[in-house]
Amino acid sequence: MTAGERRARLRRGRFAEVLAAAALMAKGYRILGRNVKTRAGEIDIIAVRGKRLVFVEVKRRLTADAAEAAIGGRQAARIHAAADYWLAPALSRARAGLRSHPAGATPLAAPRPQRALGQGIAH
Image (cartoon, rainbow, N blue to C red; front, side):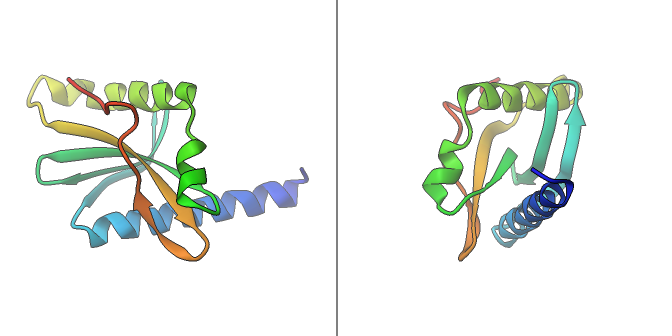
């Protein structure tokens, strides 16, 4: 892959993240962070609506099923670990209903959160 191809792929991925954030905001979520870095890895989007806090991993694929399938066990574990790092200071103050969501972005449809990863994060 050439440097130009890598830049184009990064641009498409960042655009998918913008679309996913817009879709969450349209559903009433407030975006708390984008591309949040933790010791365990990066979280694409952190959003909240009421007491629901979501950690979103955005995958740009042709279909929603392909986007969901793109998140394997190791990556799901990394997302959970990154969420734990991000939550560590807040967990001593309050506990909320927490879920993790991959978000699919397809060329012809608005991104939509997919089902929770595994059983989500339970604290």
